[in-house]
Length: 263
Image (spheres, rainbow, N blue to C red):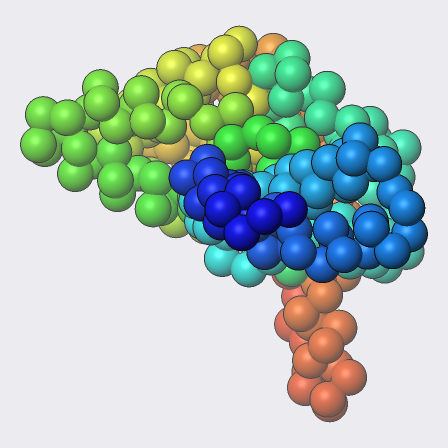
């Protein structure tokens, strides 16, 4: 290869943003020449490396945009510690059919039993498959919706939450909702209903959502949409955090378990 062609090749690779190929090209050309590889084999390998790099970069970007407080995967979850969780149900969810079908997932249980871990783990699985994912706590969601409403931008904010293929709303029930907040929450649920998938986690039973939302009618209407196409997982077990505390000699305290059921 003459110098002009060599320089033009690298210049074109940069112009096309094929940066991985640009970086590894020289080594692979030398190896191809010494090993007698065909041009097709060389090109196949170079473009495969470019695609791998771009996919990895895209996943890192989606992970950052998802807003997870921590990265947790289902591979790291100790299912033996929570025997109330049916592994077959989790394996079905890992296929992400629920995302394709715009179904909901509800994870119920007392604090510390792994609800957020499973929710984030499913979110990571969705990102690996190329879906857009966003994580938020219920309190943060409501705060942003209220501020948007005050600025007369509620519809724009609801459209933003509606665009994600998977939305994770964590910690429902840890703080009570005011009536106007319950209406905002209902609007968010309605906007995504049968259009996109949502994972909800809560330390309260469905029968307690009327108390959480401060309005039994709004709660019933919200749950009607959430549960229409939904997988409900009730986790009855010990808190991981309390187990860790006992390991260092700190006494635990009793917690009230949550179970799934109709409102």
